[in-house]
Amino acid sequence: MLSNSAKYAFKSVLFLALNSNAQKRIMAKDLAESIQAPKAYVSKILQELSRQNIISSVRGPKGGFYLSTSNLDGYLIGIVLAMDGEKKLHSCVLGLEKCNEEQPCPLHDVIHPTRSRFLAYLNSETILEFTKKYPKDDQFFE
Amino acid sequence: MLSNSAKYAFKSVLFLALNSNAQKRIMAKDLAESIQAPKAYVSKILQELSRQNIISSVRGPKGGFYLSTSNLDGYLIGIVLAMDGEKKLHSCVLGLEKCNEEQPCPLHDVIHPTRSRFLAYLNSETILEFTKKYPKDDQFFE
DNA sequence: AATATTTTATGATAAAAATCATATTTCAGA
DNA sequence: TCTGAAATATGATTTTTATCATAAAATATT
Image (tube, rainbow over all chains, first blue to last red; front, side, top):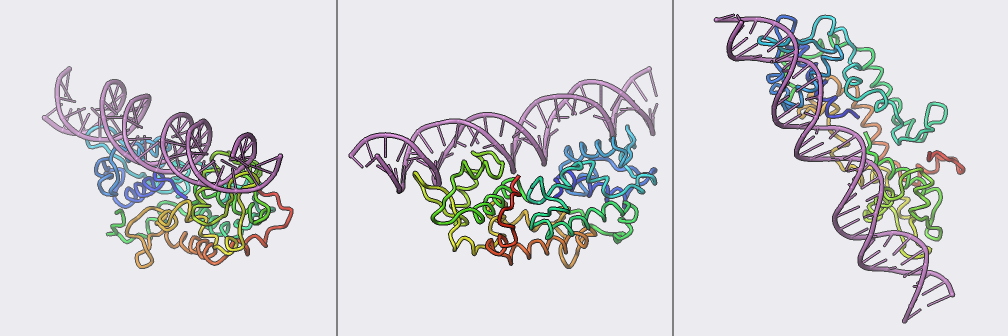
């Protein structure tokens, strides 16, 4: 459903949302350690997220990554799209070209409601809103 | 969600269910063409499905693949498991180790009901039952 | 200004998934 | 019993995804 990259991206953003702000930046190295993911890989993902304005960054000493208030208003879907793109998220479970609402394949009816609910959720919830549901001291990142 | 292999497997089995029987076998070549998938790849998948007794086969001239009546009684989940294995199907959307029913991650509640419904369905429906929902002349396989 | 620290850009390597190729085995039919 | 048609076993190749490495750019601190 989600690529590894998307999962790491999600965790990274979530972690930054809970633990960073414009004044308190977090280095790739520390973030990687916190979410238990390979540093070099996470670095690359952070760079891409930053390039796509989903997270913010500052170079140099005392630099690092963080979420600006504007970043916090981004929708969750953005994280996933930044990593996996549009297509992966919408194609038929069986990869049938002709499958759609009008001509649903038998599996369509089973999986579609679920998936559209998931997508609708990602489309309607901001990072900030999502984060509020997390207990402050939560340590899910493992 | 499902690997490419699982999708091809699904289509293959579906096609065999609708178009084959012990007397009327279908060659890999023809099946591949019917479901618009690469022949060599499909062949390999068919071999694996056959090895796992999800489909049946006969070698030599006039040979080919087919579904026996006993094959038709197999559950849909078998096809997916044969290709993707157990793990892929159950892990947390975010890949969080600590995420489960007792300690669900925030996405868990969004995705879990959907997914378990999907799995429950695959677990409860046989190939035969599934096939009955298909119109006889259906050509979805493209 | 110099230095050290950090992101950024770029691309290399490794691992996994998808795809292809082929020699071997099996069997129907002549 | 020979021949050709098919699956089977095996493994090679290609593509994609995941991961790592490093030189260049930016900036805070001295």
